[in-house]
Image (cartoon, rainbow, N blue to C red; front, side, top):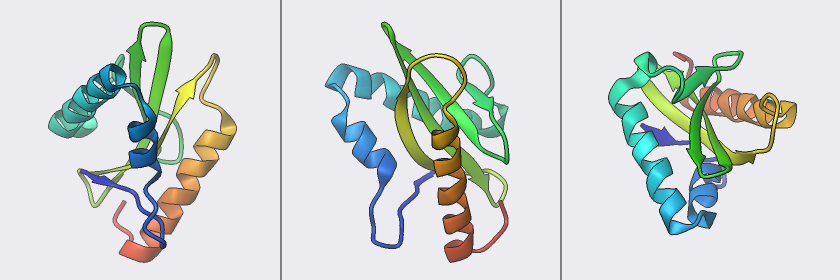
Length: 114
């Protein structure tokens, strides 16, 4: 598993995780570990496929719903793109578009295979 970094070395998912309360960060980290262990076999309620090869890791802590978007590269390698707090309804289009941009950037800089 790797965290997406842009060409300047910025890592949106690390920034998101660092801003979480310690207890919440621990639960999200446990779900990330589960994703790393199960890979593409991890399904609902933990993970779900969105579109264009983008997936969401779904973590609930009390009333908060955290989402971390990711994609698979070269088969089973998981690239975490970024995270956000989901309010209601489907994943916001802007978050999905952001993940798609990060995926395109990753593939341009690291080669296809995803």
